[in-house]
Amino acid sequence: MDVLVINGPNLNALGQREPEIYGSATLADIEAGLVAQGAAAGIAVAPFQSNHEGEIVDRLYQAKADRVRFIIINPGALTHTSVVLRDAFASVKIPFVEVHISNVYAREDFRRHSFLSDLAVAVLTGFGAYGYGMALDYVIEKLEVWSRE
Image 1 (cartoon, helix red, strand yellow):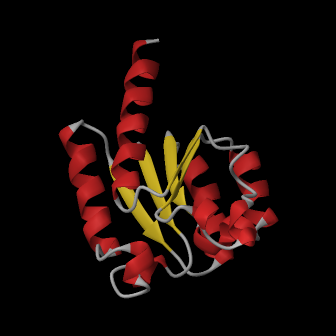
Image 2 (cartoon, rainbow, N blue to C red):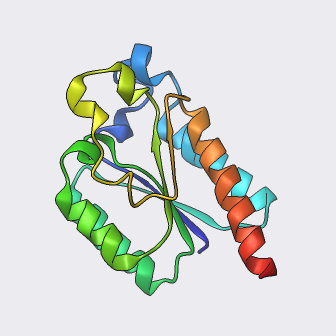
């Protein structure tokens, strides 16, 4: 697998949960689009979602064992709370892009801090579901550059 796409807590409710903030696309819609986008570029994309912090941490360590080349993650609320997730990313050393559907800087103050952003190679926030595709475009470009090196 080339790219793992991780979605954290409550993202399984996309399309139903606060559509005025998160839009009408479901997580299944987003994942299907990313898998197709990756396939068109010759990149294997695997989606994963969990509402449980420990499962996400376990998946990160499995990604290292599987030699995943890049991760795209929308950690949801774990962005603002999870030192455990930060430590796991620091440990596995897999490059990742952090994605947020809403503009976290236009929301509550506590959403403006991320425990992950300084470890991420890029952060996209406020582009809606389109941000995932932008992140994958970036990842595809990076993987192509790395394959030429």
